[in-house]
Amino acid sequence: MQFTNVRRLESKYDVPLKILDLRPLVCKDLADYGKKAKMYRQSGDPLGDVEVNLGRESLLCEVDSSLFRGVFDEREDTVSAHTGETQLYTFAKSLYDADAYISIPKLKTHQKVGMTLNLKGLVGSITKKNQLVHWRIGSPETGGDEYPDMASLQAAKRAKVTHRGAHPGNDTIWRMVVDLYHAMGKRERNYFSVVDGIVAGEGQGPFCPHSRKSNVLIAGNNLLAVDIASARLMGFEPSKISYLWHFFDANKVSLNDISVLSKAYDSESFFVNDSAYLDFTVPEQWRGIKI
Image 1: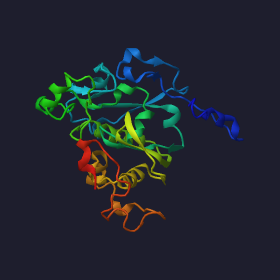
Image 2: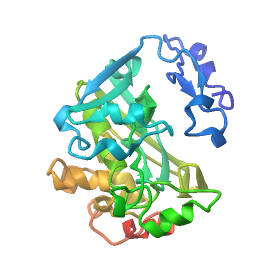
Image 3: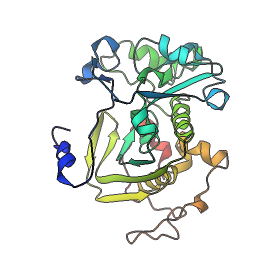
């Protein structure tokens, strides 16, 4: 916000506008990420928050919550928010009660879910961050998906930098992403999205991506449809992104439902040809999502 001087917009145009930082907790040093005691408190949303309980609609409802791990190392809040028919997500009220939600995500890869755009970006609307389940601790041998196998878990114990949950076998975080989309949809509102792919991010996103001058904007009035079209433009097979696959599998969306308008690409064959389009680089373990 300081770098872009975005607050100048409050007085630049003759319309009422207020720039808000809705975060109640702020991480000022990436080295402290995940350590709740090292977060800084601030006022957050002046209107407070809205709690949504998805109950049995949650894709986490039937999953053993005893291994859940959220944003912070302390797991008690995460487990209590996602046990049985208690499936809580607490949204910033200014955002949740709005009549229109305009999302402006960066076109970027993500090592835990493949890519992060509108749906994954909804994590920013949650005020109680530890409700966001990221993985189950351990490896598949012990019921976890923090690491793809026991060998990776043991290697991480000796490593200075670990990548927990950062593999396609993470069967937890994509469920949280779908939950956020469903919880957001509990209130009727208008949506619009503009994906900023002018300078995009590829490789080890979201924390350590490489800049990619893609020179593209993707816009639409449906968050899910924009994510699907953006995934294809990045050179990915949308159905191989787990949280997008869920909507295809549940027959809640079809490629035939999405109208693509473009002068740069053939709109009629956008989804069905074998072009890699922007051909984004991904971490090695995510090569399976590429066209």
